[in-house]
Length: 228
Image (cartoon, rainbow, N blue to C red):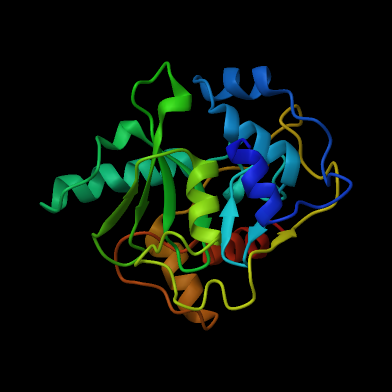
C-alpha cells in the first residue's frame, strides 16, 4: 500500500473531486521548481480544503491568494524568516530559501518543505514552525507520510492542539470547482505593511501578535475586507 493509499483509507477524500485537473507542468514553471509526487497526488485527490478543520493545504486552485501555492504567501513567509534570522539568534531547520511553505494551520503554524536536494522533491522532508515563538518540529519523511502519521495519532506534533483528533481524521472541502485555477490571473497580491494589517485586525476585534507571523486567517479576513 502506498503512502497515498494509507492516507485516503484513513481520511477519505471528497467524491467526486472538487476541482478540475491541475496543469502541474504549468504550476511548476510558475514556481520555478519541481513539486513532490505525493503532494500533487494529494492536491488532485482532495482539492482545496482542511484536514481535521485545522491543517489547510496550499493548493493551485485555492479560493484566496493567501492559501494558494502560487500566491504571495511563500515569498512573504520566506521574507519574514529572513528578517527573523537577522534579528534573532534562534536556529532554523534550514536556510530560509530552502524552506517552502505549503500549508498553514488555524493557529498560524506553517508547514514547510525542506527543499534539499532541490532537484529531488520526493526526498524533501517536512518542518513545522511555532506560530508565536521560535520552536520547530521536523518530520523526516514526505507530506503524505506526515499527514498519515499525524491524523492516525501515531505521531504527535507538540505545536498542534491536543484536541486535533477529537472528532477523528476528516477532510473538509473549502470551495466549489473552478473558483481559481493556475491558468487564471492571480488576484491582487499586493500586501499592506504588516503593521497596517495588525492595526486593522485589532480594530476589528482580532488578537494578533506584536511580532512574527500574522495568522493566515487574519490575512484572509484582511484581504476580503480590503478587496471587496
